[in-house]
Image (tube, rainbow, N blue to C red; front, side, top):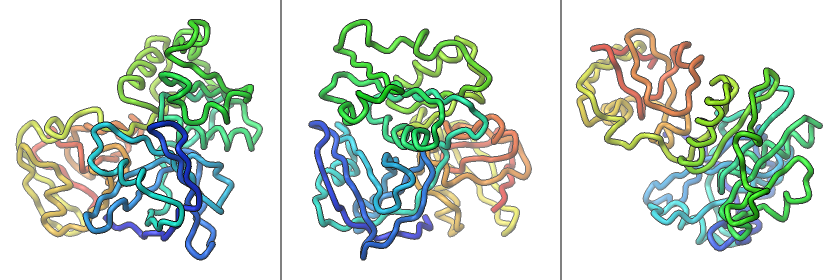
Length: 320
């Protein structure tokens, strides 16, 4: 990992729900923070001693460079990331990366349809701020189990562009994919973020309704496949075009881990195939894509994730 860490301070903290904490970070010494586009996330060095790094979406207005806002759900099966974030208090220092973005608003769309499930509202909230500021045509559907589980209900409920959907609410306000997503329109882009099951449901219904893959934009917080699935299926060789090095990738191993163990300065961050930091270009061979972030167009252009994908061919040559 080759992050340029930024020093920030927790300027404000409040518990939006019993399981979600909202943190406002400001630059140390009151310096302006780097600009970001809606949909961006930052790496957070939750525990510097243990090297624990997690990714969190920026959910505040992108035009505000005085602070970054994060909303963090306390995961039941947390490995230390979300619980560490919940322990933060006002005045605590926190190191973060510069914002990165693989979940951008479409420049070609005339209308933007945002569908959020639970904590997946965070990047979509930043999108709503940006679209509102630009006078764009958008609609945000925010789905949660209940009002008590929705971190931003009070902020959004009076916005005419927003529909709130609670599982325990009346039938007429529940999310209905057939009507709330509807049929595809050439000028409309669909954005989806939330728990895996929720995303799979929304995306499958969109496909059934005829939405083309290029019109659907998504960001997952957890990988679709588990680590074992990412590392299965035989042995192959990775050749590095710039250094000439060759590395055997055995079953049970992934490309990124082997390269890092070999001293290769390969880019990476989440190591789960969901952040996009490890993406490199394939120069020769047939890749076996197992990520959930690259579009069909990006894959056709030769882009490839080293932490989760493998090879169909005996040799895969990478631009490293």
